[in-house]
Picture 1 (cartoon, rainbow, N blue to C red):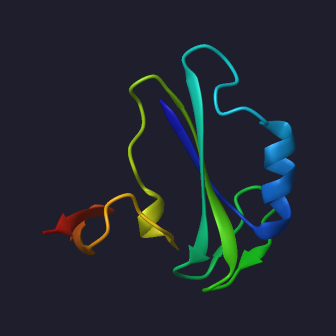
Picture 2: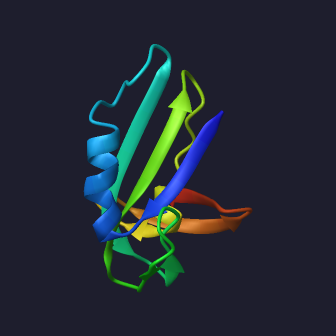
Length: 97
């Protein structure tokens, strides 16, 4: 099980206060990735517009073993593996080596 949200700059601090730990409960995890929006969209928390290039956060809550990387589809940020990613459909990307 996994919940994903894209948050505007104003909601980033609210979410940090609401979830100060990356492990709020046993078996539950939180991942936060801050970057620049790759396209225009609305904040999943407050509905405010997020423009291409605005700083925003991809916020995930998931159970043990339930995390699937998704942030690179919506924001530009430093990835653990540097390289060129290619879109292969169904919201999936692959690293070209």
